[in-house]
Length: 175
Image (cartoon, rainbow, N blue to C red; front, side):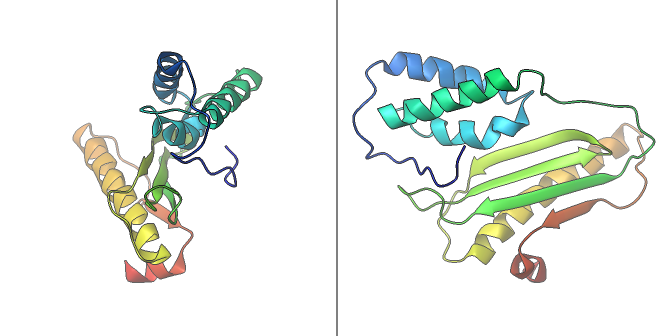
């Protein structure tokens, strides 16, 4: 989804077949289990299930076109000797026009395989990009620690300490 294409509640005109919109977007939500590359976009169009507009429907069709052209993509699990656990996190500061909340996203890899990912709206509005990024960093850390405990519980050891990558120096310093 193009980041400059901001979706909001006041777009007009209303989309006439709301049940079609909800049905397709609901299906896209299930598809994010195997296609994490569409998580952010699906998260955005899900925010307008109560009252979709033509612009929101156009965004859904764009996601469907993307899926059609990338039908061979998906999650690949490969047998590798590397058991390095790494996470990457990010946030868009005040990305939602309607409520000024940010969206948190992270991806966690075990070796070369993606094992956990998330894209969700933060619960509160923050006054700084540092706080947005820190909230994303915190959510990612929580997920990373949970995966570490899970791996220990099933007696799977990983090479070295897990790494978490963030692109905001202020959030890194703050943490």
